[in-house]
Length: 109
Image 1 (cartoon, helix red, strand yellow):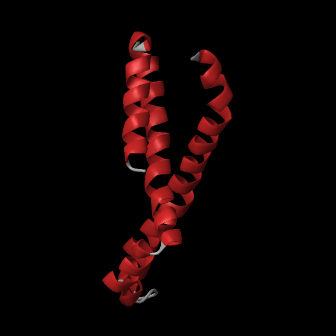
Image 2 (image 1 turned 30 degrees about the horizontal axis):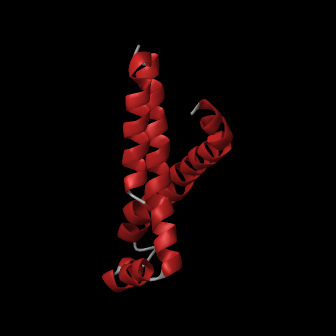
């Protein structure tokens, strides 16, 4: 099992890094656009209409984008919760916490 984890470790770090990227840059930009630019009238409210959102969610590429925007920050959060659990003395529960956090992030896929 340890050999398998060592082999897939670059993939795990790639997902973690992409979660950081999406969580800090793209979601922050979305919050600024929705929370500041639309109420200020800089971005028209029709840009966030139901029809446009449905069009994005019904397209295959749009679904992949939405999947990345949801699942990768959850993956990053699961990693942070696991690290916090270990730091708070939960080293003996590391297997259960890691499994639960990663599974809950991957369920969104």
